Every structure is written in structure tokens, then in C-alpha cells.
Image (cartoon, rainbow, N blue to C red; front, side, top):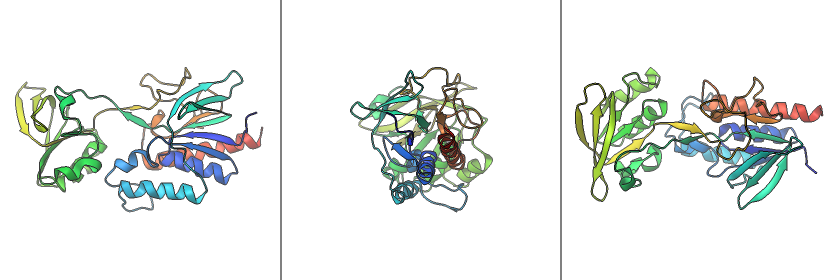
Length: 307
């Protein structure tokens, strides 16, 4: 028989951590799943500067703080990947995780975040982990004093390019369009570094080198002019998609794969909630994910009390 106090929280970024803490405070029992690190992509962010109450903190410092806070509430993260979420005939949810461990839940909160979209570059397979990276905070120190490039036009691309500009000899940000998606603050912050420049509208044609990356060939999309940049590191910040592959429930996604919820963060399936970056929302920030987590947990507790 299902214990209705048990709630599956899938993903322990800031939203999932908040939901777990609120559930615990309400006397519920969160099963908090995380396949990597508590904090999620926060751990790969150089700085967090837009979360109220914290002037600035590095991502690798913020993640462990979230984990410590879970521990203070006696919540032990389940470090296993959720492989399948499906709907039982009685409206409850069936989870398969880890090495085919199975468990049923009355309530589920999806906080699974985003995955990186594939970004194929001719020659890329040769230089993955040998010059091409998707994490500046992880791999940036290997390129101290060297020339690097960043591909992308959003906030994450400019944040990480700014970090790289503080340690690399030069940083070239390559954008496919002249219209940049990042707010002006982040663009100006990057360009305030004398070793920073933007190439737009350009696309990468080829990655070249011997044992490791040595250069890339880029093409101007307006003029078709081609140019070879001598770089040692290439950081990709282009394209993300909601992490939903494990969800075997139809009718809860929009055309881009994001999870659709109502104003109470519930999907079209009763007692199935989605919070943070994986849901259809206009703003994907730590602050909004935390608010989502608090609200979803509160509504689950309210439903449980009124059953």
C-alpha cells in the first residue's frame, strides 16, 4: 500500500532542494533523487550574483551549501538516476531508478532541469576533452594564459566567457546572430575585459589540430567570409532541452518538450508537478526555481491534509 506521505522529488537543483526541505518541514517524506551533484548546473556556474540575500558566491561553493542544508533536515539524497516514470491504473506513479529499483508514489515533483543539446562540429569527435568543453568552470583553468573561444549568445555563454577572460590570454565569443540573447549587463561585463571580443554573425565550420585542438574555421553568415582562429580551447554554450526522456506519460509536454503546468505547477495529470527549468516558464533562474519548489511542496501538503 502506498504511503501518501512519501513524495518523489526528481532532481536536486535549487528548486528540488527547496521542495524537499518544505516537504520535510510539513511532515512529509521526500524521496530526493539526484543522478549527479546536489545543486545541479549551479555547480558548473562560475558565480551566482542574482540570488537575493547572497551578494556573490561561486557555483562550486553554493552546491555543497545546498547539500548541507538537506543534511540539516535529515534528508539523504538518493544518488541514483531515475530511469522511468509511468502512470499506474489507479492514478499513482511508478518509478524505476538505479539498478531497476521500483517504488510507487502518490505525488511526484519533476525538477529534472535541462540537458545540453548536441552541437555537431566537423572534427569534434577528435577533440572532446582535448580542447572542446561544455564547462568553463570545470576546464577553464587548463587554458590559463591561452587563447580560447566560446560559442553562444545567451546569459550562460557570456557569464562563462567573462570568467574565462579573467584567466585566458584572449576570449572570442562566437554568435550565430547579431542579436544577442543575453541581457546588456552581461554583454557589457564581458566586453569590459580588454582581451574579449565578439564575432557575429558567425558559425563554426571545422575544428582542427593534431593531438588536441589548435584552431577552428568560422564563417560569416552574411558574407560567407571564412577565417581561421588559433585557439587551444572551445567552450560550447548552445542549446538546451528539458530532461524528460525518462517520463513515460503522454500529454504533459509542449511542442519544445517543456512540461506544461497550471498556475499551481500541476501538470494535466493529477498530483504530478513540475518546477524550475524543465517546465514551460518565461524565466529560468535560481530564484524562480526556489519559489516553484516551495509552492509545489505547499500544495502537495494541502492536498494530503484535505484528502
